[in-house]
Image (cartoon, rainbow, N blue to C red):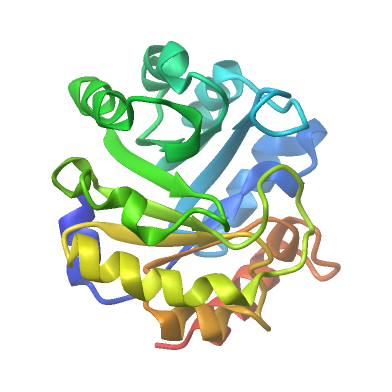
Amino acid sequence: MTARAARRTGAVQIAASILSADLAALGDAVRAAERGGADRIHVDVMDGRFVPPITIGSGVVEALRRVSSLPIDVHLMVDAPERHLDAFARAGASSLTVHVEATPHPHRALGAIRALGVQAGIALNPGTPADAVAELTDMLDQVLVMSVNPGYAGQAFIASVLPKVTRVRGLVGRDALIGIDGGISPQTAPAAVASGVDVLIAASAIFQATDGIEAAIARLRAAAGP
């Protein structure tokens, strides 16, 4: 499904972020998310430089591609993301999102992503203004608004970023999806949806739920509304 087609459905999508999943049983966790009705699998890649932690590489995406038919959104929280685009595209990523703060040439990076045949996205940190995407709109399939400072799961939701979603929508129109990532839960989802997001990205709220992954996704979808 293209970004444009996904937008026309009008339904808010749920992306299950594996950042909080049990990596020892990752395949089982992703299958449970798919059974529970997740629309996407979200993969956070961190390099220990752009953000403090180091997480996973393209091999994990390749493994996920073998166990799930869902779109796999790869969020590159890395310096010089251009160095890694080809590896993740070959591994089976459906989309690649780079941080506007991580590259001096975001337009070039987005063009390189599209040339690989996958959807192209830009992520904005909480302190980065919406206008950072103003000159990139013709290259974007999606924009990711960070509602925490990137790096760690389980952080508190920064509600002050919600007006940015509205400003981004004014810049990109209806042709690009807008996702929000960080602190998303049944408690914060309604405000995020009201701001106009298309994709709710949740990690701890899904994979750390005490009553299971499928129940957690159902709860999040109910909070997101029809």
